[in-house]
Image 1 (cartoon, rainbow, N blue to C red):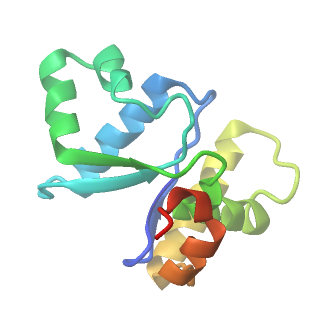
Image 2 (tube, rainbow, N blue to C red):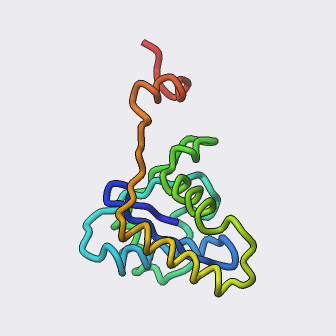
Length: 147
């Protein structure tokens, strides 16, 4: 799952596993298909082990891996802070609205998720992010220096 919260876009993909190669291919697809003219893309990620620069070199030829890495900036949420990741919020919405029942096959899951994604994207549903600097200084107190 990837989310562009200010534009009300999300991109979901169904994979059998959550491997480094799956992630690298997903990010390549985002860059090449949806943001080919972007000079720099900032990705806010949780600390899942597949989210690493090495995934690109394990998946693609070095020149392709470097091209992709030159286009992205990776920012990781604090450990145990994946709730800061807006894609996690979208995953929660998707689970409640789309995957909250038994679905018989992977093919049906893909159909359901694509329909959900298209509906949310067409409506330009945005995340109502209300976490402020003041909240961060309280919630993430140990990450801020004391004065």
